[in-house]
Length: 157
Image 1 (tube, rainbow, N blue to C red):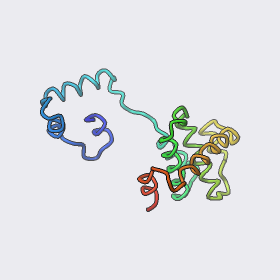
Image 2: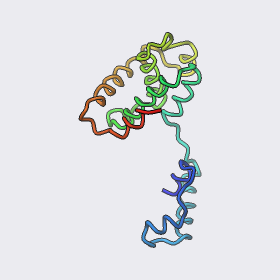
Image 3: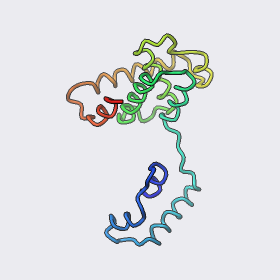
């Protein structure tokens, strides 16, 4: 958790907080030693590329407006919560979500040369996953869906 929080959080918890939540099972030196051990084993390679990273890039390239980008991000988050989509390549998921969002928002250019050249995907290939995402999106719009937090997150600016 310490490594993940240092990577993701603006204000990561202090080591003393980890000592407290472990009920003093570990001291400061042990926590630091484990952090060093884990980072050394990982060769300090803790970066990963997510669908969100690709989406940000594709949004810039295609000059997509914020509403459409937010819709694409919402679809990506739904897909990340659905086990059947775990095998999908992050760039493919991001491009397909953006393509579908542009189609839903009736964009005049849901697919263009810039997107094709930076992704090496074809419109036909991207549209296949878009159908899957559309069905996922529909299934998560039902009133009995448990993903209330995700809906609230995207319900406001």
